[in-house]
Amino acid sequence: MIVRVDGASCPFCAFGLEKRLGHLEGVANVRIEMKAGKAIVTLREGATVSEQALRQAVEEAGFTPREISFPPSG
Image (cartoon, rainbow, N blue to C red; front, top):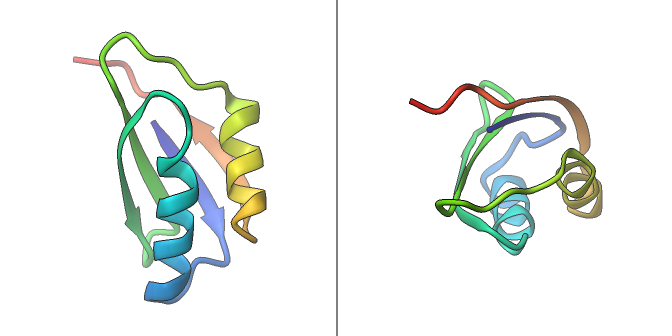
């Protein structure tokens, strides 16, 4: 899934956001693309994470969550 985020503009910011999202139950991997302003979250097989949990994690990391998209799995 892709989480658009406002405010993650430095490596330290990205690290904090990555750690916060990575602690969510079911998350296998998080990749932050600072220039694009997004976090790409990969879940473990069969796991789910609610949009509310993603938004809360982003806010707790000190950022503003924007659009969250759930691309079709291929």
